[in-house]
Length: 229
Image 1 (tube, rainbow, N blue to C red):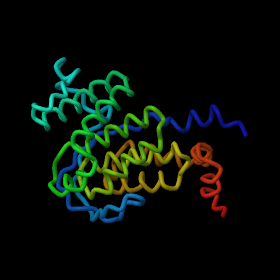
Image 2: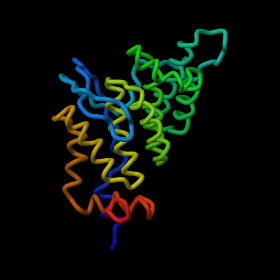
Image 3: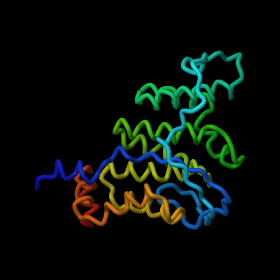
C-alpha cells in the first residue's frame, strides 16, 4: 500500500500545540492511562489557543541567563524558562530544549510531586514545554516521558491538560493509536468544544489515518494495535 502522501495528508503531526487556561477546577473523573494521576471531574475550562508556548514579554536580557549560584534560584529558573520560550518561538527547538533542561536541572525532577501538592511552581511547565520541543524534534519517547512526569504528579491544572494533549501526539509518533485516542478523548471530555482535540479525533474517523499512525510503530506495536498476540 502506498502510504506516503496519504499519511502526510492525514497525520499533520506537527499541528499539536494548544494553550489552555483552567478555571473552576473541581478535579477530574478518570485515571489517566499510563500516567497514574487521578482526575475527578472539572468544570469551566477556558481555552486560549496560541502556538502552545507564550513568548510575550521577553526581553533581550533573558536570552543568556547567567547561571550564577549567588543569584536567586527561582529567578534563574524563570530566566531559563523564558529563554526556552523565546527559542521555541524562533523555531530553534534544540536550543529551547537545552534551556528548559537547565531550568529542570536547577529545580530537580524529584520535586514534581511536591510542586503539584503546593499548587504552583515552574517544574511542570518546564517539562511540558520541553515535551513540545521533543515533539518538534520527533523524539517521541522523550516527549512521552516528560508528559508522564507531569501527569503522574497529580496536577489538575492547565499544564496537565497540555501534557495530556502532547502525550497523545507522542503516542501517535510511536504508532500507538489506541493510547493517542484515549488521551484525545479525555481532553475532549474535559472541554467538549476544544477545536484541537475534536480536529484530531475527527481524523480517526478515517481508517486511513489510523493505518498511517500505526505504521509509525515498531513491529511489536503494530501487532498490538491489530490485536495480535
